[in-house]
Figure 1 (cartoon, helix red, strand yellow):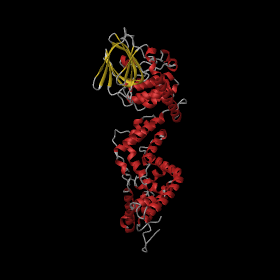
Figure 2 (figure 1 turned 135 degrees about the vertical axis):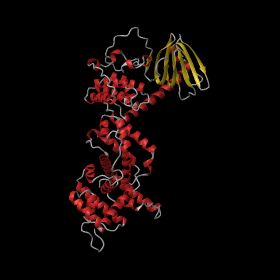
Figure 3 (figure 1 turned 90 degrees about the horizontal axis):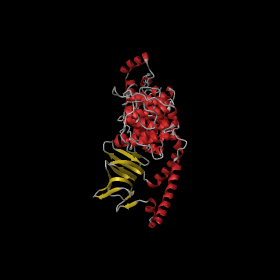
Figure 4 (figure 1 turned 180 degrees about the vertical axis):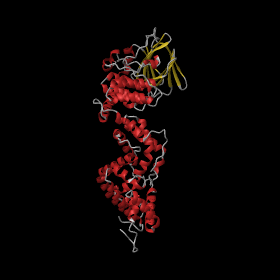
Length: 194
Length: 376
């Protein structure tokens, strides 16, 4: 799966600083380095966060927090040529924290929303998203993150394991389960067993 | 989960395994050969690829291509990172504390204003200052000393005060001002941008400008335009009678003066004294690093001193960097880090002076807010 996603390779001019060099600059407090890193990775990172969250209201805040956390940890960057998997990993950690912090509040809001919907909206008014988006939204967040990192962002399973801090076997398991659930939701035919 | 009644290829699971990188070497080669001839496996591979294609088609946010949003978010990020760089000074005031102080300040200002309003008819202000207070029909109040020779001209969008000699103290109420205020000096001009300031002239030259509130732009013939902010003072430097032999610049809390035009040099505020230049630097003079011409190397060198905790040397290096590479995009960073270096070294006077140097060089600089707090 070396070149699955559209971002599997990132062409870069020879004169541009590598991500590792930018991280070194950021570690010394240079704002320009962070600006260049942002210009380079904000679009794919934002797209990833938007897909994982279903384009939630706070996508920009999550992207902001991801870059800020990365900048503060720049001195600990391991020097890999591309820091996109690392950034994605940070984003996932922040998503996890966000979900934990807001789960109670969301439960209350969901209850209120369901009450409001019953009282104010006739059946069928809620906009229906395309099947693939609905199926993706039904996946648990760990599975959704894993399948998006693999199939959309083009990360290898080893990169995903490192970014998420989980064993590679867990990545394979989540990928398989995510594909199976997606295909079931989409009404696809044959699904392999493994 | 297998569906359908027809027997499937027993190697079907290897389609996903190969996609996920679980097969390698000979296993992968053999499976690829098998894939070419197996209809079940080929169909499964197509199905997985179709699923991936669907996932890549999931919308990633409508605002993804909004350039304005990207610029705004970029600025927000850099500002947040910049704030994170500033060490939390023990004496720093928290936001809540600052808000409380501002509330008390506003209350005190109200009392002062009420008191002033109550006392104003008695005419004590003019009497106390022993000066001619000339309130403008608009919003400019001029106080002139007894020897001042000056005139005022009102034009459509400009108010000109022409000072020949003597000293004027001018206050501009921007909330009511409808004209630009320009003070014409014997050898230049001074433009008010909302403030209270004093200006003196003598012998055909501007001799001193001090700013109490807001800021002014000072243009003196033969010198660079400078912006003076609250607390800044500018004093004309008489031309040197004889130049001393070249010597390495001594420790100082301001940028090496040789690189700046004499009249553009900022002097410390009236409270500043020559002995305030910073005991740390005086005790440990640091040789000025020669500029290598390589901006990155110079910056790294200064940063290296900073990271090593040699803050006196770091301040010196950053100062040299600013004067050696004034047009470099990192000059502002260097000027700012110089402030931090002084702050880390515990040199309060040096910190204040470096902060003022930063503000004079980068009046609209990115760290203006923080540096202004340190300049006070």
